[in-house]
Length: 211
Image (cartoon, rainbow, N blue to C red):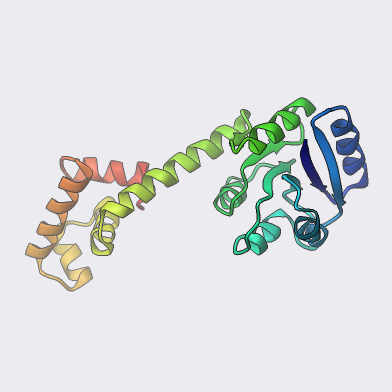
């Protein structure tokens, strides 16, 4: 049995979700929450397997709750339920530990499917436009993280300047280092990222979130 808590500031949505889940033999609603504070208490006291969480709620929404539990030992997995798609908010929510995203205008069965997938330790990103955009953002961020791990702080700084059109002499002046040192750094960056030339490096930087 999947123990589920639901959090939304609209009673009609809570009623609809509870009725939807009652039709499923493997889902049990253990808590109904009207705001982030109630959802936080439910996580602490009921320890649901999955929390279906409205991203935007008055007085502290889903992001505030995710920030609050980020440093806690919480085993509840989070499925975000949202009407509006904001790439920055959704990306932050995933960074903070949300495992699923479902749009409110999608078929109800997709939410049920998302809960089951997330409960199996999977991830559910809506297949609509918002989901595609989010997957692109997550892929871009992962590539950016991989590149950042390969490069030193100084090399990342030089990559940003190269991508913005600075030549070696201008980079040297801006960073107060010798032009020869800049050339060494640029060469090392080419080797680490397996790129050939400044144009290819600039394209790589823009495609992988280094600028």
